[in-house]
Amino acid sequence: MKDAKYLSSPENALVKRLKILLEGGSKANKSRQELGLAVIEGVHLVQAWLASEDLLEIFTTEAGLQQAEIAAVIEMQLAAAPSTELFVLDESLWKKLSDLDNGPPIMACIRIVHQDFPVKLSDDVLILDAIQDAGNVGSMMRTAVGAGLKYVVCMKGTAQAWSPKVLRAAMGAHRHLKIFESWTLNMIREKIKVPLLATSLVAEQDLYDLGDELLDPHAWIFGNEGSGVHPELLAIAKGVLIPQDPCIESLNVGAATAICLFEMRRVRRELN
Image (cartoon, rainbow, N blue to C red; front, side, top):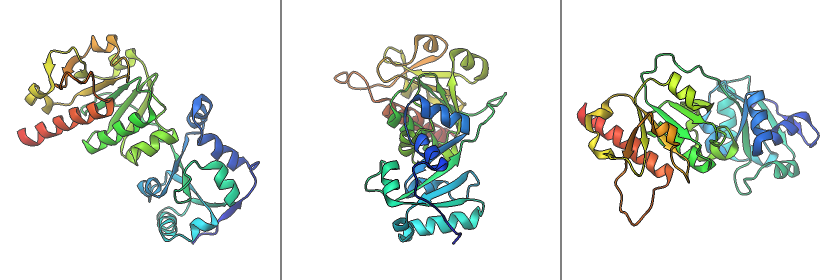
């Protein structure tokens, strides 16, 4: 195994950078954007980036090196991408950095790959309109990958896509997505040419009546947990109603996303 570099001081520049990237809030979001870096925690997330040149650094502890699962992950990554740096942190320092009290001690720094949105889009898109809960954002991204989508647009007001909480909830989905953040209504108008579908409790179009319309690429819009899709977005989209029992006012936005995207997947499987 590649020789590790040992870190024990909280004043170390790399440790300070790691601490900032693991935080929430606007300062951490700004740092992630400026550095083009994010931090993933836990064995399963690191496994999701195995063999990627975008996995730049691995961090663990002496105890972590002794765990077979962690050692195997490190060995596979270093074999596939020898330029990956390996760091071993002092146990007390690790406890100050990581929020995963009972999780295996491993995290990694990954490169945030900036993408150009295609001029001529012919794929489905998931649009998140001011989704504020990080767990919902991550879950929706995971659902998008499961349904076969590659493009996710996060409008202003949406939880930062590369924050630790979103990354944990998405369970590796980020690696399979092209993610675009801080979009405005005008950007939606200018850049997205496929038809827009927006979930709405007052829409007249039933999701299950869309039929072969779903064979063509669409951009699906899901709105804020409290207020739903913004009226200006609804005005340029086709409203879609998910039929449900009236005893419940609305569905969780993550559940609504799964219902819609997998209905689209079902229609394409049956009608193709």
